[in-house]
Length: 181
Image 1: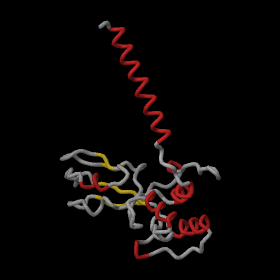
Image 2 (image 1 turned 90 degrees about the horizontal axis):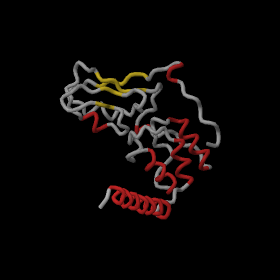
Image 3 (image 1 turned 60 degrees about the horizontal axis):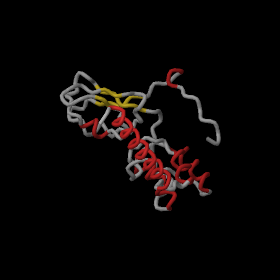
Image 4 (image 1 turned 135 degrees about the vertical axis):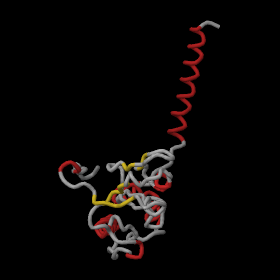
């Protein structure tokens, strides 16, 4: 078989499999509930699980199904409860303080690299992959990715992870998303 014939066969297979994947992606796509997407957009996306769900999206789905209250998100605070109440046309209950307190300032994790033993327990605990490192090597936190959920603090066996206020000021400022997007 010549090189051109082999390339033609591989190219043909690539087109066939690409078409099948494209078709499957369109036909088998899960229908997304627009209400779930709107609820999820109001949540802080910390993925901290303080609400009792493994992340913000499952919590949004539970709210949309009527299985969860709108006041279970400590990182979102009263502002998120109010926004959810407005979206859903309900009265805003007070924040459920049994699940935690809303932080007064945004927090990020910081690892004292001199104390870090490289156990990777914090990496496995981080729901947003904001901690980088390798076994037996020092770890560090990607501040821009850290949501301040504090899930990495407890599993650390040497207490080298501390929560600090997130960087404030012009370097941390982000443009607001326009209404309706």
